[in-house]
Image (cartoon, rainbow, N blue to C red):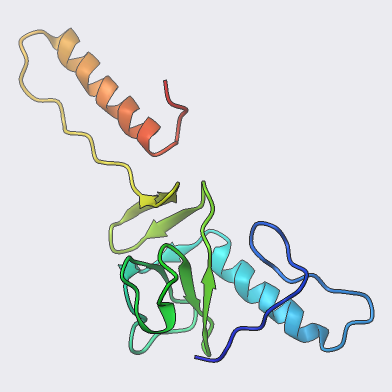
Length: 152
């Protein structure tokens, strides 16, 4: 992996490089910003992994799992995106959401990556009203846990 370029002036959330008046090689800054926007705009990840895949394809993105090694060592929870030549590691922020292809669901970052648990289907019960209330409560709990609706 090549060493990533360090930028002195960047946006606060996605660390996109700013252009500075009179700056030489503006294309380096613009291309880096485009690569980061491409990875972070509605991100889709292949799953979580502790090490980079052996033969990544341009556009591949992963969540760096605990115990990371190699190019991802020390970057747990970051999003790692492959631009065709190098890995760019993006630190997560509270509220960042990705679609995880391995899990087939959305994951949200809030002091760690999580996904909403699947509620159980209603089953049994003698009184329809209590079963319906339990099912609705389970659905609301999942929506709150995944921060789709605010907590009670």
